Image (cartoon, rainbow, N blue to C red; front, side, top):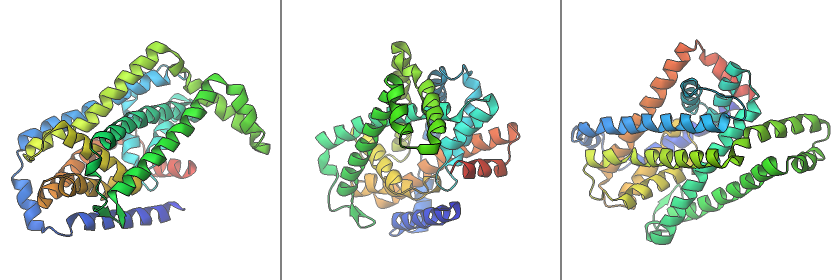
Length: 338
């Protein structure tokens, strides 16, 4: 699909999801829910969001060591601009991040992408663990009666688990052969690429270099620790808002269910900046699965999405201006990496 087609489709899905979220509540009731928020809890939520990106930078620095030694302070710009880039069609944030760092440090983009691949692999493992835990001990929350876009949440949950598990398996096999049997992989892929064999082998070589960090037990342990800490921060970003809205259920289980359901919906329904799909996921988790009122769930979704968007957009815009980049350059890079 072209970028314009992706944008149009993404916006259609986003507005459809927003309609689903607010269809049964009035604007006045939502505004009243905002007025009832205990705003003292907004600051902790913002600080946790910022902290998660700091941890992310430290984790990424370790995974980049085989490619180059880069100070953590120089990683915030590509991280935040990349996160802001997910507003664009196709969510090219990760590609933009690799392009920005490669351009600045004159590094192979494929090697940087390898490090990002490992980051996402660790995140998927942690998410699958949480997903499995909830399905084993709280499967009753995924009722087949709760539907969105014609599909039950139970069906989407099972489908999400299968897709994520399949992707995890493929990535795991690819990473294993890249790290431990590079020549076998190069030969296997090269024999099927014809005139692109040389280019393909170079890409595998760069990926192999970027993945070397996981062979170091100490580095692997650090990355695992940072991954757990960052994902915990992402989950607990919601928790101060539980108190801001004085939700009935402030348990850890409710928090994990919220995180898993929101993740399922934003993956199943890709929209620019997660607009609409994020709010729909919150509504399903808090209202249709939980015992919260619909107005509270709608307001909660809007506030939590806005807090994340404010951090990402303000930081991304700051680094774009500081680094004297233009939106045209970012769009061009996004199109070039299509």
